[in-house]
Structures are given as C-alpha cells and as structure tokens.
Amino acid sequence: METTLNGTKLEVIQGDITQSSMACIVNAANSSLLGGGGVDGAIHRAGGRRILDECVRIRSERGGCPVGEAVITTGGNLKAQYVIHTVGPVWKGGKNGEAEKLGNCYRSALRLAEEHGISSLSFPNISTGIYGYPKEQAVDVAIEAVTDVLARKQAFERIQFVCFDRQNYDLYVERVGAL
Ligand code: AR6
Image 1 (cartoon, rainbow, N blue to C red):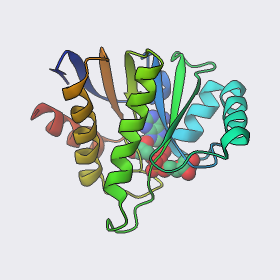
Image 2: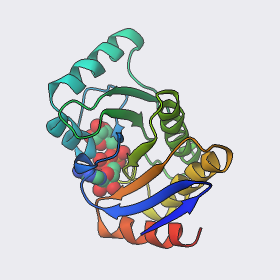
Image 3: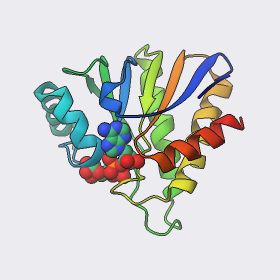
C-alpha cells in the first residue's frame, strides 16, 4: 500500500530489502559495522566484499557507529547504489531511551540520504529482530520519525518500509493507511 505525504510517496511492502530497486537501502547494523545476522547478514551477503571493505575503513577512521547514528557505503553488488548503515537500540524494557534512539536511526539515515542527494530509500524494521524491540511500538516510532522529517522537507521522492514478516507488514499497513 502507499500514500503521499508532502510530496513524498510512502510505501509499505513485504519482502527482502536486498532486492529493493530504491537508490539506497538502510541496514540495521551493529556498532562494529562488521556484519552480523538478520538483515545485516543478508545485505553483506548480497552486496559483497566492497560494502565490508568500506565499513572496515569507516571503523578504522572513527571506531564504529554509535546507536542512533548512521554511516554510508557503496551498495556493492546490490541494485541500490548506496547502503546507509544505522545501529538500532537493543530493547531493555523501554525505560533506557530506546524510543529516542530508534527514532534517531530513522532521522540520521534520512539526514545522510539528503546530504548525498538520495531521493529514494528503503528501510527495514530496525531493532525488531535480534534486538528485540516490540513491533507494535517500533512501528509507531519509525512512522513518527519519518513523517516528522517529511513534514519539514521535500527532499525525497519515495520512501519504502520493507517488512520481512507478516506481523510487521500488517502493522505498517494499518499505521501508514491511517496517515
Ligand atoms: N529484508 C528485510 N528485512 C529483513 C531481512 C531482509 N532480508 N532479514 C531480516 N529482516 P534484525 P535488529 C527483518 O535482526 O533487530 C544483526 O546481527 C527482521 O524480520 O536484522 O536491528 C546486526 O548485526 C526484522 O523485522 O536487526 C545486529 O547485531 C528486522 O529486519 C543485530 O542483528 C530487523 O531485524 C541488529 O538487530
């Protein structure tokens, strides 16, 4: 499903983000930037060695990526030209600034995308896998952060939420449908 918000097409799809045809995909990485499981593992496998090489270089320059921040690399062998790697919070019950940190992931990624002139990007459901963030709460944080940025900027043509599992897909369809 899709809707338009201040000139940006906002889409919800179910699928594998490595197959995205947006200019940029966002990765739910960890602070080491050296890869891992989940969507991070899938992106590195599909994108190949050049993504990891750039992550290693960024890591040696600035020691990794803090939670809520983002870095950008090539898309390597992916259709996407770029990957923006952001680091979501680990869910620790909700009273440890998780919502602000998760919102910062979406804001940081969009800021970096805008700085690089990227007009279309795909987001996975950051933190809702291995990091254990409750999906019903993560969707609200994601949509609030993205719609807040879009309300102030017209920098993007298309933003996709790529949901891997049915539960996230249903939640996003409901929330985006209500915008
Ligand atoms: N395409 C789209 N979404 C996916 C894909 C895919 N190919 N694979 C999984 N997801 P997770 P996190 C969904 O665990 O919770 C890694 O080891 C998945 O269903 O990938 O932020 C990192 O290195 C879930 O909804 O990331 C970190 O150590 C969402 O992507 C840690 O996991 C996020 O799940 C980050 O944990």
